Amino acid sequence: MSTPPKISRNPDRTRRKLLQAAIRLFSRHGLHAVSVDQVVGLARVNKRMVYHYFGSKDALFEAALAEVYKRIEAIEFHAVERGRSPREKLARLLESYFEFLDQEPEFTRLLQWENLEKGRHLTKENHLLSKNPFFERFRAIVQDGVAAGEFRADVDVTHLMIHFIGLCFIYHSNRFSLSQSLDLDLGQAKVKARGLSQVLRLVFEGIASPASAAKLGAA
Image (cartoon, rainbow, N blue to C red):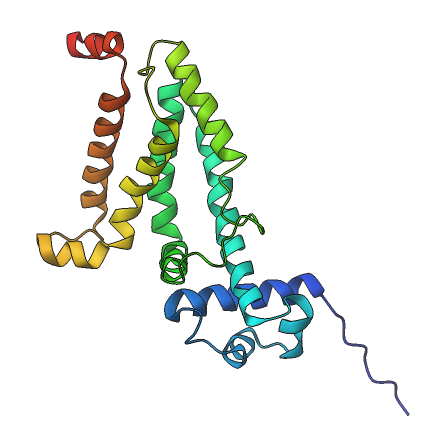
């Protein structure tokens, strides 16, 4: 009698397949409209693997959020290191947000669903939404810009971070409603390019120190 072949197990691959399926389904339909059966059906894995690796559907949703946040955090650090001066670093960051949100629409959708949940999966206890350590890197860049005379000394760093995210996020989170109401296709690359160009001007003219603004005006 021949011995049946052994089935090789790859826990990392199974967990990754579940996460990919969860991100895809939750971003489209939200937490409550998606069943565990739908996730395992798309991932093509045994249902018990959800409970083995994550424990519950809510925990799987949290893991999906954590995964997309890891993606954006990775591009944030990479972006600022591509600049030389504080201004260049922050410009690369704004550009990277536009690019990331274009390439990762699931991030925007998942975040919108989680806001409808009042952020209950993104608690301080599980640290999923913590902007540290990137926020500390962002603060250091702004402080360097202040010390170099590039930026105003009264810049509120926390609100500046909010403005960075908001100015870029709106082009993707409200793409369809704004496109209809303004008769402008926010999905077009040239429209987003004009938007990014104006975001850069608004931000850097707004935070420029008086001396730096005078130099730019004289140039």
